[in-house]
Picture 1 (cartoon, rainbow over the protein chains, first blue to last red):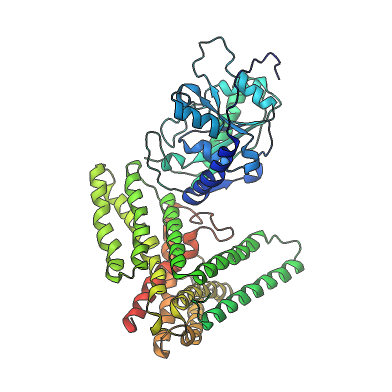
Picture 2: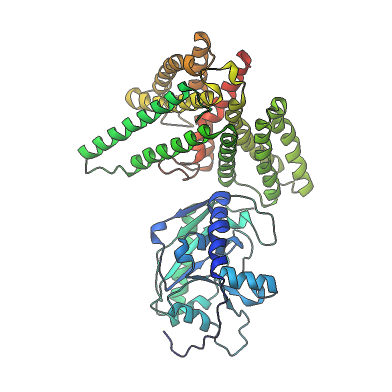
Length: 224
Length: 311
């Protein structure tokens, strides 16, 4: 990994609350109220460093991805989240940082700071990070074009496996802009891990290919 | 356990015995054919153990817990159905109301409000759901959407809630079995019929009975299953139900016949959506509706035949 990293983010995690939240709220919500179909669960990576890359439709996505891991692994998982949204007010910032354990990412790249420094540092500490390269939740249950930031990150950490995951149904259960949760069985398709391919275009092609293959495996009809 | 009669406890032991026997036979076959892959069959047997353990635990704890258990089964079945069918984005709030019908329907069971239990979904939810959809105002595909949501509610909540109502029927009219006896009797015979039809179909099946919907079902399987189920019904009825000999024969035919109809109705829906199973919730069996398909028909019909004669 690149050594000229200037990580400056300090975690504010409340370990007890975080553990309790996932054990008593998130896991029951995911496995009883919603119901997860985890496909290819043998492909799950239980130890870091690893980059989980998923499509993004709902606030449930992060919680669902984390809940497929045992509680002992969850403490090691950190979702990357946009600082302009998740740190925008105090209660949300507290929840995102103390309970979820996000690594804030500055989506605004006009600064001279290294936007990935904190993520690279987390990977160096053998953490598992979750990244949504669509950038935002977008239109529910529709796959948007992936942003290429993930390629830059993979290039800087070529020895870290990238695990593509396709999520289906969470956008139906809790789409953007809705506060009412409606239960649906949701699917989580785990793909084969892969590494930095040596150049940006081939890496993005590989990532998008594996996502589309996972999406196709479900044979889902569009949600209109 | 105190709410169960001796006969119910004996039937539970018989079921555990039958399952132990199948498990034993499975291991013997597996040992003699080490090259074959038995994973699917093993998952199927293991899931039977889990399902039976949960069912026995629920009906032997208390009537209230058993009602909550059946409400939860309805919730899983409705969720599976709504995840399988195409729904419109604009229907999300309508689906929420459909889910709300579950606690209300099972609450009506728990307070023995018989008339309301019978009409709540067929009348009030029937009128409420389109009203909620009108308030949202998306008219494109309106009737199609309404029809699919309402049908799902009828099958997964209304029909299955009859199982729970069996629990609260006057136990004095059925001293040998009580409410739990009726539930266990119906579930046991319905599942037995599924298996008997499957086995006699495998052994004797030649003429397809309904090839466009379910190509593996045969006339021989249907009749073989029916003979076995009617025979077993005649044997079991005196110990668990108030039914006399003639009524037992009738109920046997009803369970075998309508169990089959429920089975092929869910098959038709699966064919419509091009899926093999309604989900993969129960390892080795498929979805919840794959397991409950026959019961969605036998539960309300058995309930009404029984209440016509006795309640």
